Image 1: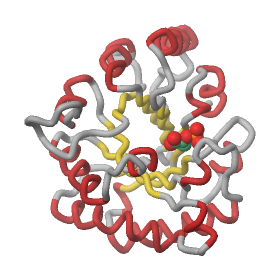
Image 2 (image 1 turned 45 degrees about the vertical axis):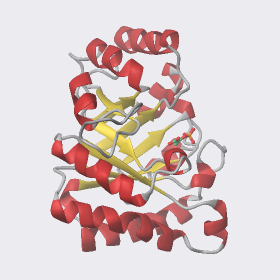
Image 3 (image 1 turned 90 degrees about the horizontal axis):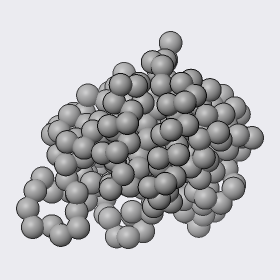
Image 4 (image 1 turned 180 degrees about the vertical axis):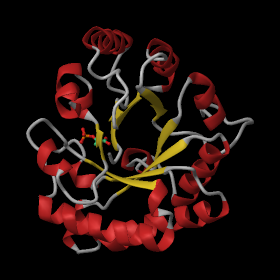
Length: 246
Ligand code: PEP
C-alpha cells in the first residue's frame, strides 16, 4: 500500500496543558498509535518536542520540528539545530513554511536547513506555495519552480533518503478556503512532472496543506498525486485530527 503522511503543525498554538491533553487522548484512544500504511508526524513547538517524543516513543507516531537553524552549531542565539531536534526525538522537520518565509527566511536559508537535516538523517518536509496575488497573476507553477530549484541543487549535492514536499498555497493557510480538486489536480500533475525531472520520484512524496478539515479532507485525499496532508488548525483538537486521519 502507498504510504500516506499526516503532518500536524501545531505552530505556537498549543500550551503545555493542550499538548498533555492531546497525548493523553492519543494514548487512551489507541487508534492512531498502531503501525499502519499512514505515517503521523506531530510537530510541536521546540519546548514541547521532548515531552511529546518521550510520551509517544513506543508508538508509530513520529515527531517533527517546525523549522531548524541553517547552521550546524555555534553562536546563533535563539536558534535550534537539526542535531538538537534529532536528540529531542525528531525524525522530521518542516522547512520553508510561508509563516517562516514571511519572517525573512530565504530560499538560500531553506536550502541550508535542508542540508543540516539530511546531515542528521532527518526527513525534510519542504513547504512551497504561491500568494493570492501570484495566483491571480497565474504565476503558481513559476513560483513553485523558483522555490524548488535551490532545493534541487541541494538535493543533488546531498540527497535525502526521503523527501516530503508540501504544496501550501499561502492564501489557503488558515483562511478556510482551499483550491478546487481540479486546481489541485493541475498543480500536483505539474509537481509530479517536476519531481520526475529533477528529483528521485521513488523517494519524494507530495503533500497538500491549507485549511484541510473534516469536510474537505476526503475530496483532497482523492486528488491524484497527493500522498499526504499538512494540517494546522484542524490538528489542534484530537477528535478533529483523528477524524481526518482515520
Ligand atoms: C499550515 O500552517 O501549514 C496549515 C496548513 O494551516 P491550516 O491547516 O490551519 O490552514
